[in-house]
Image (cartoon, rainbow, N blue to C red; front, top):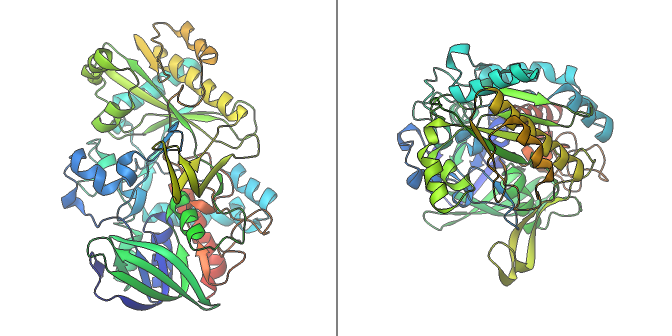
Length: 509
């Protein structure tokens, strides 16, 4: 049953789950199938295909956190994140990649997570992929923008391939970022949340959890507010699962003073992402077709850290906001959008074995609005490491050469100000350009790691089952628990990791 307004305000349940994205949906389906009484609390609004009218003015405030303007404190990295029923899977671009084996081995070697070795995850990946109808995008469905990657990589002698995604009967309309009007995207709404609902799960949307208070080792109180009626809900649960994302989960844990682990909110990874656009004489029409249906990747140091190149979903609102030129030049560029092929370069951050990223409440100068505040406000800080930046710039250079190899007549890497390049030899200039915060435009849709999993309290916030090391009955099961950046679009990684944690511990029920 789905409630957009509460039917009661004092609720008893076996399991309270905060968040309806990958982690929350998987947990709800897994536990409800066993007959447990499950309640899912989702801050975002309930949506179905009837809401997905492709009107960004209406849908961005409805489905994106902070109107798609969430960013680090210094505004140097914009973070796209869903705040809607189904979480970010409702608005993502469907790329469905398994966690690389070397990453799983890294988790076992560095964090004692032997149960997550590749051989232990194989059947879980298969199960998740089957439920989401994951398959490689067929050749006939590769859009011109994605074909640029395949053609350019071939000429550069670089490995590239078609990507798998989670779709069924996709017509390639290109509107993934505003929800799938055709219900072709097999997101959490249509898969694991639907499975949970059929097994009796109650789902409260437009409901924000703001406090978790342990009552006993076997009981927690979750306080929440319905954003439509402003009613306060008191939810008493035997187990509480926090699955609000690597941004919102640590903020809720900190606000609830569940911070005996000093690592809560630390080790934020973002897969920092840069962008390059190429102008062609032929029409590319980047707003149409299946986004991210091809990929080229490179591991320059042989360490498992490097970059990969994809073609993004080019919604008009994304193109307009992200294009770096200003004034008349900006307008003239966007008039030529149908001739543009945009590429994004994603970096697996953490090559220097540390992360300066952190999510926490702060007082003082709020860098996002320039005001001084005595009241705590959410803060996201992140500084890309030297090796990660080197990989990112190598990826930008490769993307520029790739576009020229595929026939571009002009290439524009998103620096501030952006240089206009007319020949492949210009590509190496990127290493000489200023590339500090806000000098190179960076984005992210992959925050992870702020409540990372480890066998020990010294290096992790939760254990191998997702339980907080220092508290009984309270679990984190979302992208926060990934010990290191996965180096691939993280949807399948989060689903599989959460399912493995549930297999191992079953929330101790």
